[in-house]
Length: 360
Image (cartoon, rainbow, N blue to C red; front, side):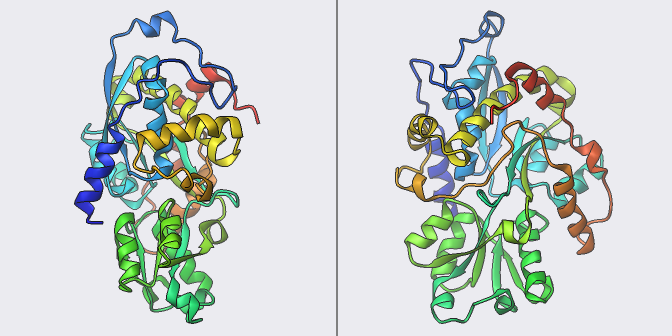
């Protein structure tokens, strides 16, 4: 699909509102959501700006709205779509966005080094064996012919990532290392996820670092094979986080606190649906996502293997630093930031005071 049409479709679909008439059980407790406290309910709704990517793992950001968690906190959100999390950093810096999911990237680290006030405040995508951050998808004919059997067979081939200097680029780099060659021996091209499928179909790509549901779609169309998981290459990779910009960090931290409460509640819905696979939670959440996104096929939700996440919101800084050190080793960036100060837990701490830890 042409990127412009794709963005239009996703934007229109994500603009739908369910208008739920009754509280639904939460993933954390299985009980009906408690009515908003009177003080919060009495607030005049404040509008905030949230970025998103139009992929299925955006679900927590969609559920913040569709489950009424933002409304409980006296918030309304305007959503803006981007083709890469790395491209949200300038929008955060200028106040166009208040809250953004995205890859901890070279562009983010350089922006922080230049004085941009953006912070990593919560986990969004952390790979695990049960929920890899991404997949290496190899063109079907290359698998069928035996041309690609192991990592070494990808040397010299064209592989797509959404953006250089991001977690998916690091995955491609580790792929090269596993094959016994360097990243310079791969023909790396930047494409948005929707554009990777036609490129595989047209054989202008040999492999792609893909996320769900595009992995399933490649399989369904017979153009690509779910070949290796990112967790095989970068175990426990912190592939994406939640970032706050100056509005929440400097001007209205109270809004950042309230947004984090809404986010953690939605994150737990996501975790219960896709990682814990709780049937009761899935029965509630999947119909909402079918209604509120352009992922309409119920069978899709049984086939996707979405990335894991920490339902308590904390970021694994050691895993984050592993990719940062890889960027340095590739000459993509100098040692310009202190990750221990870039990641702050204040907002997650506040949300957990309200919600308590996730009952595992």
